Length: 155
View 1: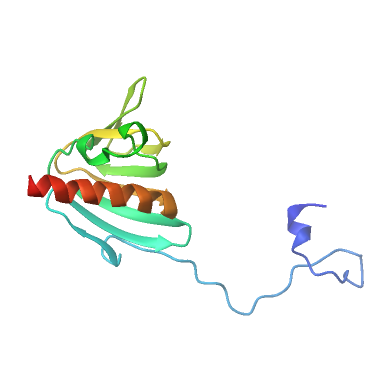
View 2: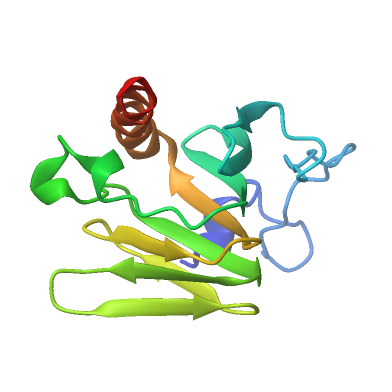
């Protein structure tokens, strides 16, 4: 039995025994967001983050006005590294993620996957990218980043 037939109507078609899919009167609306319609995030000076949560995942549109080394911002996380995986696409600019054994550089037009355990160490000013992340992991990491960001501003 295929996965398609798992969603089929249980009653076989009268003519040939095939299973048919139920007819839907109204298509389900899929969630969508743009940089302009995102309702969360904010302007943090060096970084503008426009985001929206879609259940288990969060979509972020990030714009970096300055080069930001995240090492001091990730202090307090295991090994001082981001514990959240991200999928993304670079619209403009360049970003560098440091891993325990190498660096990855992403340029305009690159799609990427960044597993947990990375550190953003360089983002070219003017860079813009889209990032999709598991909401719970992103929230835990963002709380530490914001705490360190606020402490940095007080020092």
